[in-house]
Length: 277
Image 1: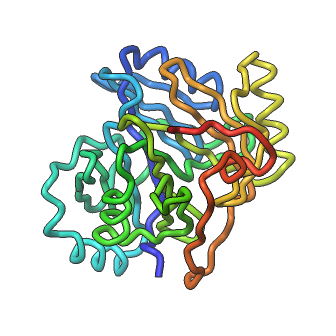
Image 2 (image 1 turned 90 degrees about the vertical axis):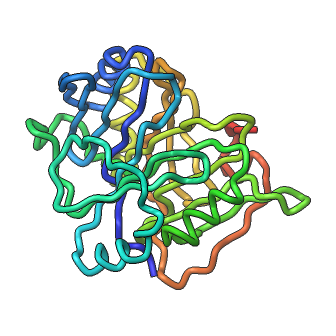
Image 3 (image 1 turned 30 degrees about the vertical axis):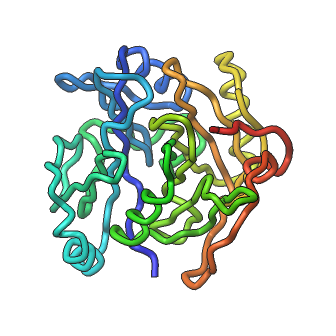
């Protein structure tokens, strides 16, 4: 049984958060507003918070629950691990808790989080909701054990090399294939965020939008193996990847976890891939 939560928003740090806010406003249709020491970027279905700090680092990721029963069960399950302080959030919610994973990443869970004040209800681009994010880690095995065993995420697929070493994994919190991906890499950092749109036609519109603003697509268009989604990615000024995706796999609750070989075509069935190691 999936957790019953969905990714709500991310908070990234940057040496120049205003530059990043301007980038995401231009490329992904966010309305960016300064709120004290941070920038809150909002668009229908997607919210991104930016503040001063090192590049390529996650300040926190926030997941939202809509159902009271699922929230109560989750809170009871993780209460002894929820020692981290909940950071100031850009949205109202009914309750919240925070945990730190083995790499020290702060993960927030909230009951019925809303939208930021002044968030637009529509924009001129196709729908694209914040659907998943990915982290790079030097050791994905304890991270997988924490997210699956402690937090209750569900493993959809794992990628392993010829020796059986875990190289990547994809975990879901609802029926969509993954809300979190973990990649083995030489350093711990943020990897990418993904915005899920609804169709091939929408993918084309997003691609034409990037062309119109002369933003280079650095990976894709392609199709991932795990998740089976079509995608393309651009790179923000700090080097973070930002993905537009469609057709991500919808998983049955009893779907067994898959195993993929560690090779380029696992990450892109159609050709070249960005290998994190």
